Image 1 (cartoon, rainbow, N blue to C red):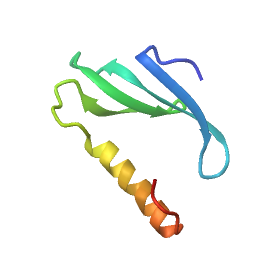
Image 2 (image 1 turned 60 degrees about the horizontal axis):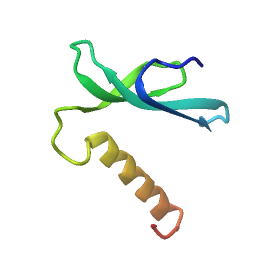
Image 3 (image 1 turned 60 degrees about the vertical axis):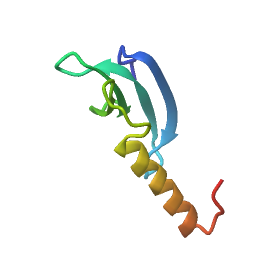
Image 4 (image 1 turned 90 degrees about the vertical axis):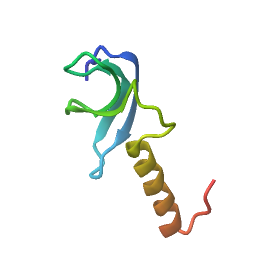
Length: 82
């Protein structure tokens, strides 16, 4: 996968649900209106905006949902939270 040309781009490699390697990229970019946004993308798929520069809260709904999902995974796996 080639880089997306985002600012502060960070990429890690993990696997999808069938075991294939995928790249997960997060970084800052601009939306079609030119606003600075934080985005996430998996491999060469389209990206998704998870925060606008003008957002005032500490956490976005996407981050809150991801945290809740991991907490639910720990509960179901009978693993104590960290």
